[in-house]
Amino acid sequence: MTTTARLTLIAAALSAALAAQAASPAPPALPPELPPFGADQPLPAPRIVRQRLPNGLEVWVVPRAGLPRVDALLVVREAGLSADGAPRAGFATLLAGLLTEGTARRDARTLAQDVQALGGTLNASAGADGITIDAQALASQAEPLLKLLAEVAREPAFADGEVKLAKANALEALKAASATPGFRAEGAMAQAIYGRHAYAVSQATEAAITATTPAVLRTAHAQRFRPDRSLLVIAGRIDAAQALKLAQASFGDWQATGEALPVPPAAPRSATPVRLLLDRPGSVQATVRLGRPGIPATDPDYLPLRVTSGVLGEGFSSRVNLKLREDKGYTYGASARSRHALHGGSIVAGADVRNEVTGAALQEFDAEFRRIGREPVPRQELRETQRYMTGSFVVRNQVQSALAYTLAGNWLLGLPPSFVADYVQQVNRVTAAQVQAMGSKYFAPETLSIVVVGDPAAVAGQLKAWGTFQTVAK
Image 1 (cartoon, rainbow, N blue to C red):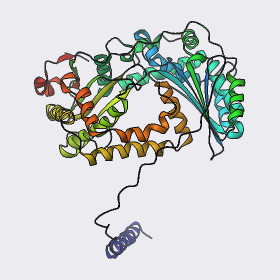
Image 2 (image 1 turned 180 degrees about the vertical axis):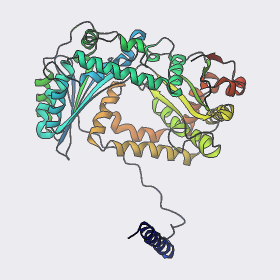
Image 3 (image 1 turned 45 degrees about the vertical axis):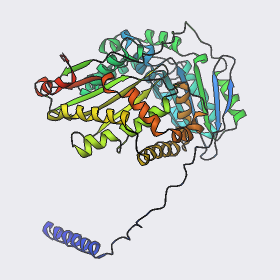
Image 4 (image 1 turned 180 degrees about the horizontal axis):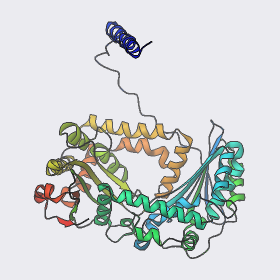
């Protein structure tokens, strides 16, 4: 059959399919009034068996029925990016990544093979306040899994070859990130929000990466990895007594060495607003950020502020996204949200917009920020936001690994394990009056710094209404 004949047959088949689809009856119409949503179901309080080992390590065991799998997470507080300081900006990310690249007993390849043999995975990552190592395997392999997790946490090799490779990769990643306007905007905004606080220093620098050596990594590991600043979460199909016995066997003789790093002070709750224009010649769009200091997760305003952020700028149907994307067509996406850590937090909003609407986009952010602080949010809008927050939380934490991560993450933020079970009820208790109060308190435009990354020739004139901007060369 010739190519022309094949194309003719395909066209005929498509025409027949489209004709059949057009002739098929229309789907039944929905009733004019749908039944109301059912009551929100809270996440059942997980059964947590807790024990503190003599060396100070906290152990939480969460027995779960279901898949024959065990998830284990070790979280080390005060070991993350806030412990780096300016000379070692971003160092914690390198440290965490190298934990899984070999131990004193196994090289990187052997370690990866042994994890795979358990039917599991092994990862490590750094955040603002800590480092997390997570592993999972079949329940029948719980004992070797925990031994392997302890080995990775306590005996990383930091082999010369692996360190060299990690540094090369980090430098390439930094080069790529530095070319993006978002990277520059986030770095400048962190400085504006936190000033000299450790949270302002989270982006790696070439000097910090280059200065990293195996000796530096070993010293930092000894300072940061301490049982009295750590939590071990074991979740899955495992008996609590057995899990505690395995935790004691793998981690019970772990002792801290070296002097512990000091705990960072509380981050600032307010800052003098700044106006920065980061020069990006020839850019066809502007990256806009607005921000100010926020609060830690332990603050009483935490959940009311989270709900306010949900209404204002988290999710597709939030106010700023609907306004700037759907209504105005200025951007593919806009957001405004609160971020929370152990010692402080931040409020950050932003979008990438066309050059010609940079000033107009700032005007829309300003209008929405003033509106949420002056007008009570309508009941329906508030309920939709609460349902989204609670529903996604419950669905996400049905998964065993997600629940373990949530418990560990909450501990890292200073929140109790009961927070998981209380979340739905507490979110639903937030009132329109509280949302208005949070809007007025944390999103007042006159308290916000503004950072714009773009071409001054294209956007500088539009920024005059928002104050005097300092232009920063690339």
